[in-house]
Image (tube, rainbow, N blue to C red; front, top):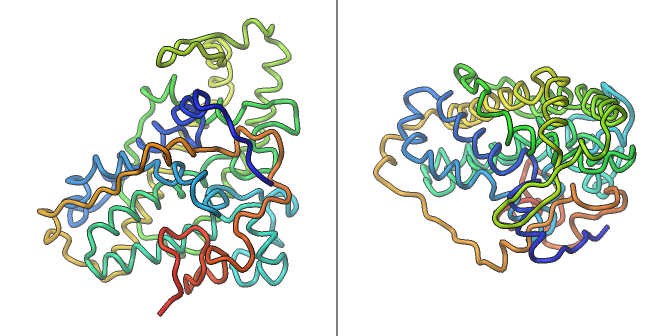
Length: 351
């Protein structure tokens, strides 16, 4: 399904306000994950904390520019049944046999994609390749963060099926924007991930379990709020935009009873744990040798930045959407040998 194109001014506004977790939240997750790391890692990660913060949103910037990137951010798991989806295969090869690659890609592959990025990060640690360590760490933080968003686990990702269109940006962008300054982001130390293939599924299942409350609480409040109190107008970068009022936002935030904070905290802890596990799986290389180096910045063109398009603003569901053309160099084959993986930064056949 082709994505809708928007006016230039709307795209500029969109880039700041409605992406998964919001730009600010993704950046905060990566930034705080640095402080979960052991001394052997934090010596490098803290030195590059600004890089990891700024580049936490790179995958969102690629969503309208790289074919197949969009599917890496979500999974419409309710397309396949009901919670806890015990019949849905957790391993890629098994899932392909049951549902085919096309169907899996059409409804999102985030829990399958996270282990792929993990594998690349592990290799980057082995190679002591600073550019790839930082690039892949930033990207991995983004995808792990996305798996913690309840509305990234459903075909009803923006409330479009229940008359609640706009709830996606409301939950993951508007609420953190208003209230995250009071959240506690100190989550303790990173831990070793015992199974990197199954851990992303834990995040997805946790997120989906919270979905009913995300939708039900908003609907209940909407029925009790006059329209003129549910929405208001705010000035953003000189543009007057219609948004959820602070009164309605506060009522919804209180009804959620700390859910957004809990999902952000869990995101931070898992991001740090995935970074730590990749480093341990690489043999715990000495990262102090890289401290004096600076990761290479890959500057995006202004034109490319304007290609940012988020599915959460589309009018239709993902049904029928084909992230990768069959037979193209971006077609997903086997994520565990990295052949033709559609969400790769560099697409190539394995040697």
